[in-house]
Image 1 (cartoon, rainbow, N blue to C red):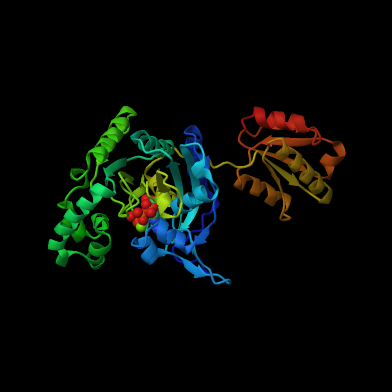
Image 2: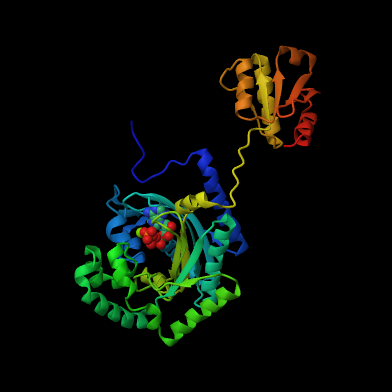
Length: 422
Ligand code: ATP
Ligand code: MG
């Protein structure tokens, strides 16, 4: 038996309702905040991610699905959305347009990770990016979008953690301080962090190993190294978050370890879904667009992991699972009645009434049993007799009330079905 690839999911109709609920929350809040949807390819030239995500990141070093196609070009299944969006912004000339540019996307992403709860090899992200604005107001706007989105889903126990990693100038001073600190503890760091010490020391701060975490707790803090203008930017953001009523914690272990990231970084964390608790992560990336060959264009964005949001919904949300059967089941006995029932179903569905009839050749008794099972609100029985007399019984399955109707009088059928509580 062929099985789905490790770390991927089949999402069946009962479960996919939750996904639809989340996706409609994305669309609703993006509309409210003036973000337009962008769609882009599932795969891109490998170079884009090497440069746009960063050569020294785990994603690029260990997690990408890269393949050479029949023409010998190296492509990679997108591990995230930001690099592709930045590429599309440049390629479509949007970088020269009116700013700010506000975009969102809902995509599947691919990373070759060790599958576990909340961590998959194909997963889904809702992301938003805001280009062409460096002010703290832009950062606050983007965080508000994420916060409104999480509120719309109605998740419990979500907290916002923010940090500033400064600009390339103040960060290089900070980086030196970090290297100095971690070098003294080098022997105790995990294997990966020992090499991070050379390539990407900021990343040690978000290592998941408990020992590295313990060491990182006493490391120098980014916010103590901010230059004056980065400090003002961060203060400005905090002031604006307070003004719009968004609670936050300053958490100096949140980092993005690449040079084109600057200033604001943030995460929304969900308690009670296990180790993979970051449901949304984002930050400012003022150097990214130029890094991949575009003009100087500031940007800030976030990506929320939809799989983890679905897991968080187990602990309470605004989602209501309305298990609903069709409005009407038409039981048909015989070929003629079946033809009639098909026509009636089609007309009713055009008019917004969900109706079903037999597709698998059941007996009348079995059809009625099926109507019960799928929880049809009404049934209508059609046989030769009904076709001859032109009258049939429309039955409310909950109350048992019966109505004598003409199968051709669609308006009367709809009136009864609607009046009786559909
Ligand atoms: P983590 O630290 O959990 O590996 P990350 O820093 O790699 O996360 P980002 O690249 O910031 O994650 O992606 C944004 C969001 O996408 C994450 O906060 C998370 O909710 C989700 N996400 C990332 N990787 C996975 C995965 N393998 N499976 C499911 N969701 C994921
Ligand atoms: Mg990761």
